[in-house]
Figure 1: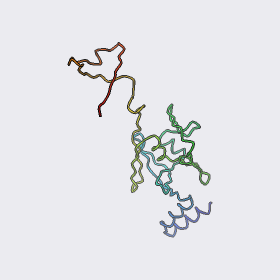
Figure 2: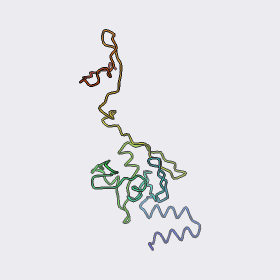
Figure 3: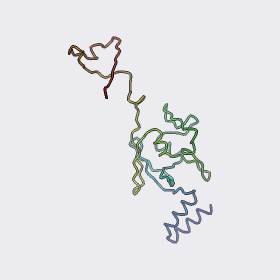
Figure 4: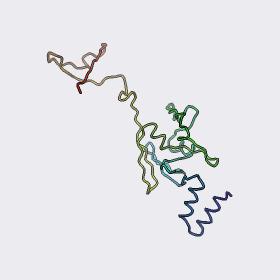
Length: 175
C-alpha cells in the first residue's frame, strides 16, 4: 500500500476527515479527488474525478469514454466520425500524467469546442450543454430559407418562385 493512502486511512479512522482531504489534495499535486456526476448528452454518469486550483475537471480517459463516448486518439478527441484536434502548443492543458495515472481536462475541452458548462459544487454535478453544430458562423446548409421581398417597383418576389433555377443573391446592410 502506498504511504499516502496509508496516512489517509489513518486520518479517516481517527475522525480527521478534513485533514484527510487535505492529504489527498497534496498527494495528487494539489488536485482533490472525488466522485463527480457528469451530465453529457442528457445522460448522467458518475466518475472518479480530480479538480485543481483552476476548478477544472480532470477525469481518466476511461471515464471520458464512459461519460461522453469521446476517446483520446492521435488525431485528437474523437467520437464516431467527429474528431477535435488538440492544440499542440498547450496540449498539457488537456492531457497529463500524474502518479502513473492519465488525466483528461474535460472542462478545458468544453471551452475548446465552445460547449457551455454549468457546475453544482455542492452536489458534485457538472452539466455539459449542447455543442454548437453550426459551421461557418451561421450556415448549417447551403440551402437558403424561403423569403419574400419587393423589387424596386414594389412587386413581391419569393425565393421559392425561382426553385430549380440558378439564383445569385446580393445582400447589403446599412448598419
